[in-house]
Image (cartoon, rainbow, N blue to C red):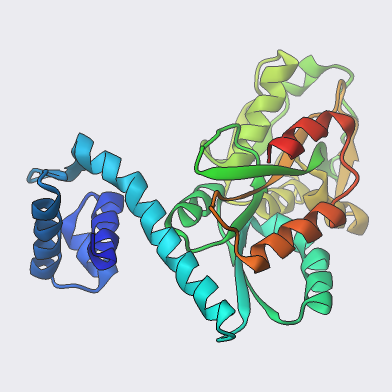
Length: 307
């Protein structure tokens, strides 16, 4: 199977639309259709169901999708390994992460990594949790640092980095006091990200696990930093990772209130693609991260070994 045809196939699979896929692949639509037809003839199966509204994968196409991703990833790995063995070009890594994690957790770690391994080129990509997942799937990032979504994909390895406490924050100007009980929280106006975002999952899970009704979301915001700024302005309360709220709390923009119960936490994890042979630069980063983000709590050891 021609790698070029597989890339074209995956573009169509992502967009479920030939026109948008052709634009992404920088091809004329007729050329894109020809490549898909050649691939279907080679395999002897139909890969897409075509209708006037959309294009959908057939069962055969759905099966090919996972293999195509693996074939292209292995193809890229082989090229990089061969060039490295021949001494052509330096090592490089592309790291994907959420904005808050990049600023508060990764900045010092990556700075130290660069000091000790100046030969490794680093590229940092900031995106939402869903975007990071897609980037891992298509191979445009080598590793992702994100909060655990509670989903497992056998294509990827997972390692726990830390358990980050969530904190209840309010504006320093509204005279807010710590709630006396969990039930008191359900009457407060909250600001949260939209449904589907990893931060919203953390917010919803905190109340579900506490066994109380979730409070009203009076405003939905697109990022944790936006939520913190809105809370500082007095628009409502927020439940956010402490690592994100700490700078604002130190400046006095917000105050941290006591959580009336067991402190909810979020698991910060690393995700990377399973490979027969890990690129040397990625192996080095994984080893450095294991040292930099110690200690793990005993309860974390099982997940660490699984990763």
